[in-house]
Amino acid sequence: MGYRVAVVGATGNVGREMLAILAEREFPIDEVAAIASSRSTGTEVELGDTGTMLKCRNIDHFDFAGWDIALFAAGSGPARDHAPRAAAAGCVVIDNSSLYRMDPDVPLIVPEVNPDAIDGYAKRNIIANPNCSTAQMVVVLKPLHDAAGIKRVVVSTYQSVSGAGKAGMDELFEQSRAIFVGDQVETRKFTKQIAFNVIPHIDSFMDDGSTKEEWKMVVETKKILDPRIKVSATCVRVPVFVGHSEAINIEFEREISATEAQDILREAPGCLLVDKREDGGYVTPVEAAGDSATYISRVREDPTVDSGLSLWCVSDNLRKGAALNAVQIAELLGRRHLKKG
Image (cartoon, rainbow, N blue to C red; front, side, top):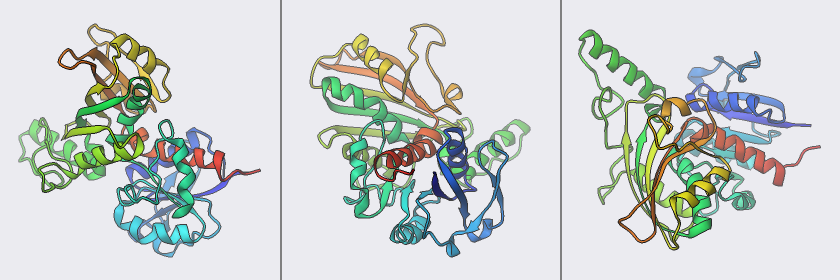
């Protein structure tokens, strides 16, 4: 006996990835519904590589009563309008937008990091999926925090254009093509040219000079992992189609060597250590795209602090940063609270 699952935002990058991962991981489904906006109603999407085609239904008219889980990948607007409606109908919402992440009554979950927090889901019947860059970072930080206690994290991100949706991917492609053929470069989605460039600006600016993306990494890490950890983030958009990379510097309460950290990360859930100190002995976004792991490379001691490490991590932002984590939350929810059969 399986679940009735609705995927909201099924025509977008993350929604399609959710459908693919549901099929790939053989999530127990009795029925799946593809939900989208009125303009995408009737569009067909495939349930992974199963050959099963789903015709998108209009979110405005969809009745969530009788459905077990709704995976929302449609942004904050639709989440604001329809997630409470779904939750009130008895359907547990797992939302990928930023809207509910800092709500004290909504668990913010990365299953490898804070699975017990899911037990509070019934307060709102909504569970939040963290920001893509936060998700991959806390998977790496958790086992190290357990071992040596993290005091402070300084992270610089190198985030792919797929984090800005299809429009971001299209803009990188179109600008790159324009440069090669000598056409004028047009900027629509990003604030500056993204092709052959990097942009130190993701989301809107805040009063203190940080961006909202950087703020998300700070507050979400505290909520998921430990409120005592200090975090400083600089988030940068780079001309990569899929896969976020992060250079992370960590200061610990207790001494930990690079070798110890490598041994811990080698066994940590969700992590895959690829750390050979030679040409090509590290992972880049090209290798991580399409995979579920968070890859860790370049683990080394930081001699400028008493107990510090620096490392590099890479993950497919459409998977662990969004769709995979949402499905893993659904699996956790099923094991702990929505048991079938």
